[in-house]
Amino acid sequence: MIQVTNEQIKNIPLLHVVRHDLQGEKLPTVFFYHGFQSEKELYLHYGYFLAERGFRVILPEAKFHGERQGQISGTEQAAYFWDTVTANIEEFNELYLELVAKGLVDEDRIGVAGVSMGAITTLGILARFEMVKVAVSLMGSAYYEEFARELVAAAEAEGMEFPYDVETRISELEPYDLSKHLERLGDRPLLLWHGKKDDVVPFKYSEKLVDTLTLENRAKNVEFVIDEHAKHKVSIDGINRTTVFFQKNL
Image 1 (cartoon, rainbow, N blue to C red):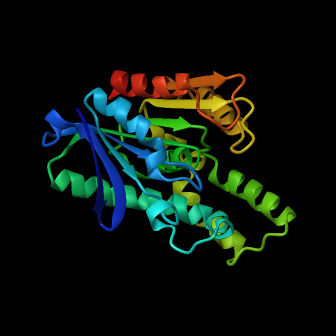
Image 2: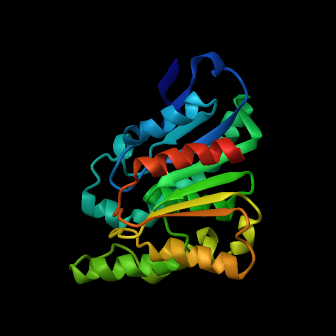
Image 3: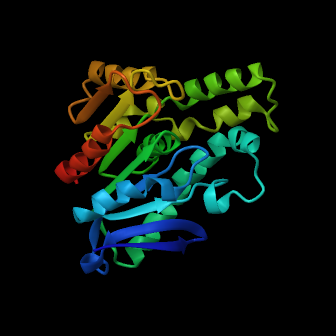
């Protein structure tokens, strides 16, 4: 039986998914991050499939989303997109340390994954934290600065005004920008899944990352799965590949 509990750690709401017979044991653990303007409950199927295979799965609620949205509007969520991403990354460390203190996670078997904004979060976590052993990016971008500028240009073209200095905010993304710190990936296994027709997070970012890693001889443990027809939606094959990748590498 799979057990799902709605918990809070350090005031961060999360879903904690684990097989009932393993709930008190020290387990390989996957942190799974949801997409933009979504919420953790909508990604519970990832938690279920992974928990079935013996993983502990933590699905955090992102800042300004779900239980944490409060009175924030959709426009404000967009304006503070990168604040949400960087908050996810810093909060990952808090969650990890708390679960280690409780004796629930195997510190040598930590995985991170996510969809869209959650995939962007995942790649930023790789740039910041070495304790992560395996990662899966489903429709993400490691190119924080480049993608941020693209998003700003599109938003401004629609008349959106930002409540902060855009250049300052973009400069603050540098420590999380894996594309500027590719050496931090090391030899950690990384799965990149992306639909070629993605109209939200462009496919070009995953392709560019793989091409650059290959050119620099850093891609030996990188698996790139291209869905020739998918737009901004993960297929069943992508979900299954995520589970298999963690089974194989974590």
